[in-house]
Amino acid sequence: MENEKNTTPAPEETAAQDVAQETAESPAAEPDKKAKKQAKVADLEAKLEAAETELAAVKDQYQRMLAEYANYKRRTEQEKEQIGAFTKAELLTGLLTSVDNMEKAIAAPATGDYKTGVDLVLRQFLEALQKLGLEAVGVEGEPFDPNVHNAVMREDADGVEPDTVTAVFQKGYKLGDRVLRPAMVKVAN
Picture 1 (cartoon, rainbow, N blue to C red):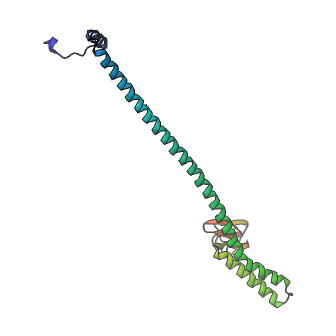
Picture 2 (picture 1 turned 180 degrees about the vertical axis):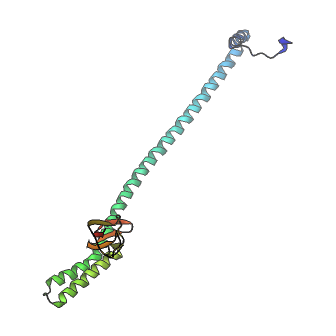
Picture 3 (picture 1 turned 45 degrees about the horizontal axis):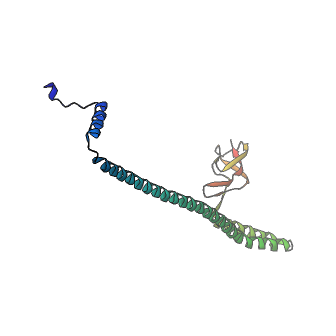
């Protein structure tokens, strides 16, 4: 029964059997073998040529993608510059009216109306800045916030809660959530 079990022949035995089989074959089968080998070589050459063609196509696609990305980067940089220039122009256009009125106020004689004119120009200027999203921060009596206030002095103040702004030396400004300049303030102890 042990002889009936399937046993796999060793590689040496298989190679020896192949050699024995080749020598036992007739010489007429030899041209058939050559034809098979040539067909196999032709098949492999065709596969190689197809792989080379595919590689060339992929390389071309890669080069095109690199060029497209470089163009995209250049285009976005140009757009950023144009947006910056447009934003500056819009800002300056909004401020020109205030500049014109300030020049008129400086050229006018110093009378009682002079202060009123300068106040109007300042209000107009601040309105133009507010339209652009600028917001003033730093009001007397508000709680001290180190994110928007810069405490330059502290004082003992009666009737005022600790960490309350008691005086504003210079207003601060923010644009959205970004603080452009903190307010310089005096804070109660």
